[in-house]
Length: 183
Image 1 (cartoon, helix red, strand yellow):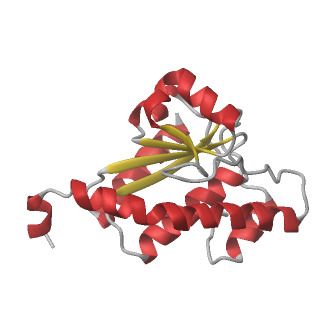
Image 2 (cartoon, helix red, strand yellow):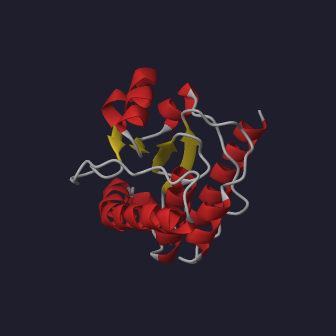
């Protein structure tokens, strides 16, 4: 219940400061302590720095235990890119999250299968294949050296930078004329 409350508080905070939410994006990995928190943090960082409005990012894990902090390797690798994920806490993937998401980006094919099996068939992709990518899986750095975390982060960051322009154009197209008058 705590995770759900935090999720909705984040959604309210995001909409208060970044305008109405037009697109909810869920990032999925296994434990929600390495890859998906790094991806969520990178997406939020780029969305904020590029002043893109209307996108809400969140993440979860197919086998996550609620409330765990990211691994030290994930925290360190992300901080080297100027992204602070130290206060992030893991969340297990739920059917509700899948239903509410407009887009689900996964690190491995097994994550895609889990999300599709819970109703995400038409909106679930490997992060590396959306919208038009290679379709490679992102290697899980759990238990690896800091260099392995950095390598995973570089792959994720490259994908985030590739995807952001597409997301920006998508939410811009969805902007209502009345939203323009609020600026």
